[in-house]
Length: 264
Image 1 (cartoon, rainbow, N blue to C red):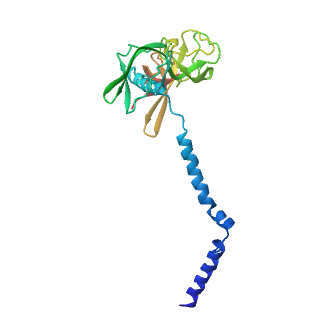
Image 2 (cartoon, rainbow, N blue to C red):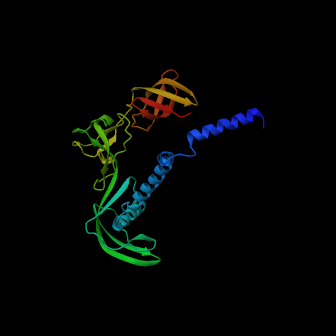
Image 3 (cartoon, rainbow, N blue to C red):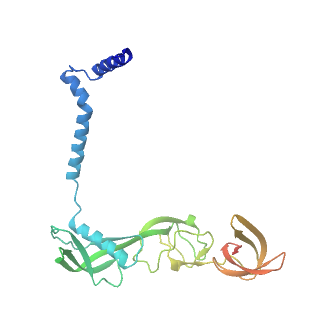
């Protein structure tokens, strides 16, 4: 055997004897095997946690399925929360199952009565008629930070954005994306009250006869000109404007206060 290769084998032998002694005592072997033991104990701990995990009560599983069905049936965004006023004490079926809502009510109300049955193995496992549930439809809303007066401009700084139950509201909640100055209140709002669509209206952003900034976009280029508004208009309204320089009349869309965009 060539000397260099023999030398390498000797170094490897000495290294192995140092790291993993052939005549190691019990204490040394425990030290060597400790990482393996630690991994095994960790697996046992995780398995024990999985075995002791709390199962979701059967009634709650029924409610979760009903919530999903209500969202789909009533075309609701956000989330639906159902809570029983009287509890349904039955044992879950042994095989797979699903919930059916029979003759769903015309609309969801804070207290809604449902007729429900559980289908398991293609058979009716249980039926519950006239099950009254407390219902909530929770979405992100704007709520007044303080009392707000009628005719005030809707400003996002006057509102908190938080999840609220809107099932009892007479109209849909106002969108949380507010364009400053584009809307004004039609009525007073109390502190913590939800801003709904029937409480606000578009305000005129352009007044007839006033000067407006007009811009035209084409790709990365933007052309700005001054013009005179020939109409008044709210947000997104199409109005006529007259170029001050050329006296040419053209139409554009109101996009902000005294600002009009012309499509190219």
